[in-house]
Image: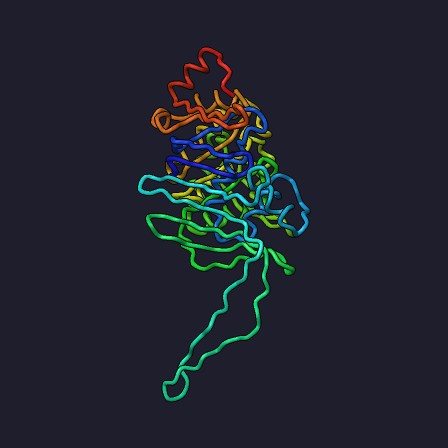
Length: 357
């Protein structure tokens, strides 16, 4: 679990240090203060072997077409679009601090690899090439943890994007990003449900959904054409799509499936309250808190909503209130500053109707 975070040179953050993150962290603040960027920085840290690690950020923000040029595709992730500077994302957990650094390399040339094999009589046969590799643009990515280093290179050339891995430790915690623009993706939900159903964990998902829909008896994935949707049995003469049961059930299902598939990992939720009526938020937070504890998963979510804060305050169980943090981001003199509220501080703010969004 992430207990601290430091970001340098990423998007709107010249430098921000967050010393406290807990199992449930809610992030607030005014528009354009960096709430989504904070989630993107955390996800980028975990999405380390994906050639689309940068372009996916644009897709989640609704950008579907980009020129294959560094200024268009990569410059926006650097603070003030300064690609000569370095991005640094440091993540602290209970036992270690790991740092990811990103540098723009305008003339990356992959090294030639010479392979040796054993021929007749035990002689070594050397296979080599005299063809010069083609230089390309690259983002040089380095991870450092406990004195060890892992490196990779995100490439941009005439053939598109690629990833050249020198050495990379891949067994990092699972991370899932739920974007505000695509919260309910039926195919993604069906795939995640299928992974749980195969290992007999369907009932664990149903248990949490019953917080909102107590008549739910069973779930199943149904494919029609190219679309797979989860259907539920609520005592009618047929199963119906979960989306027909209401926005609250659909959203809770998406979040619970993400949490269950990110066991021992982290789920990032952008604009938590989108599409939700305030009356169901408290029960959804009750379900999220219970699922996060059961699957040992960390949840970091952003919000603009006072009702969402109040719902989290009321919906989380007493044993999770000590593991809850509200993080407010403020822009002061062109610098983003964090202010941390524990549960008791948030209680005082809510009871006195203080503005903390």
